[in-house]
Amino acid sequence: MSRAKRKWDHIQNALSTGQKSLTGFQDVTFIHQSLPDTSLDHISLASEIGELLLSSPIFINAMTGGGGEKTYQINRDLAIAARETGVSIAVGSQMSALKDQNEAESYRVVRKENPNGILFANLGSEATLDQAKAAVDMIEANALQIHLNVVQELVMPEGDRDFTGALKRIENIVHNLEVPVIVKEVGFGISKETIWKLKEAGVAIVDVGGFGGTNFSRIENERRQRHIPFFDSWGIPTAVSIAETSAHKGNITILASGGIQTSTEAAKSIALGANAVGMAGALLKVLIKGDLENLIDEIGLLHQELKMIMTALGAKTIKQLQQTPLLLSGDVHHWLQQRGVNTEIYSQRSIK
Image 1 (tube, helix red, strand yellow):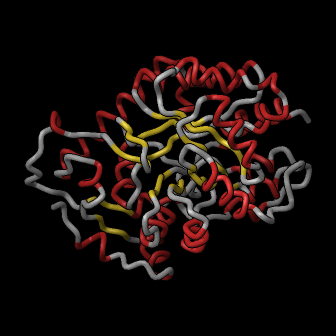
Image 2: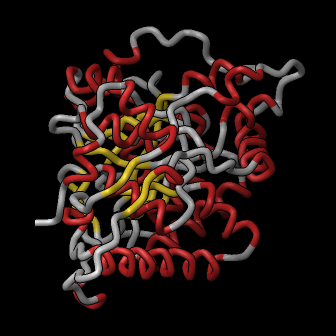
Image 3: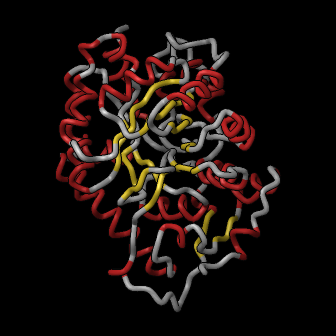
């Protein structure tokens, strides 16, 4: 099967398998503040990813590219929406374009439509330093995502089976690439053990890519003759992964993604420790079922709703939202307790 056909299959299967909302955010509750001393007009959504300054903590996360005209059109519309709403945007894996230059235009269109925006290039952990430089150059990227997708590759009929040396390759890219590197899991969550390894390799930005949203095991199982069911429920829920990695991050910046669909979940992600929130499946569904204008409106509403939540909590900035008190319950609380995370830190803190 061609890469282009596989890319389009991924889009179709992502829409058909859907998002099951198993992210854990239902176990995260804000503590109401009756005297927030804030005004909606004074709320700032400005945030930072390492050295990158963002006008919004929401970004359009990696979805597609390299799948011919259909993925070209999706990336074009996503880029226009990013430009019109001031959010950052990541492209899907560019390996297909590095191997077939005919596919490069489906990625380059993002920079053409969004000449002044913040763009993330994207490659897998199998990439070399030269390939990383080529991917960045292709779209004049401000940063590079390196995605970790072991489970997807194992379930994918034609996927990789050898994951040796990935950390060394990442370390080489981190120390020799001129733009920041974001290491991103693809729907199965990042643990504290992985954070420790990435810190030692010099990684400064991590996207947890937690379990509970688009499920790449289920997507790839749709393409198999014999299903591998045990990986369909495999992974660390997004809320858990944000809290666990945040507790052990040191000087690493945490990004949140993995089934985040609403402004409330975005706010909870930031309050758990994320600096920015990537959304993919929820925005793709709006675009495919509606049109570009619907997508632009949706992102605008997410911004407005996020400001309303921050106003109610008394958080004027993203940094203050990261200090608002939370109550963790249910499976999220149990998981974090078992993993040695002091959950009282969240419930006893306050905005200063």
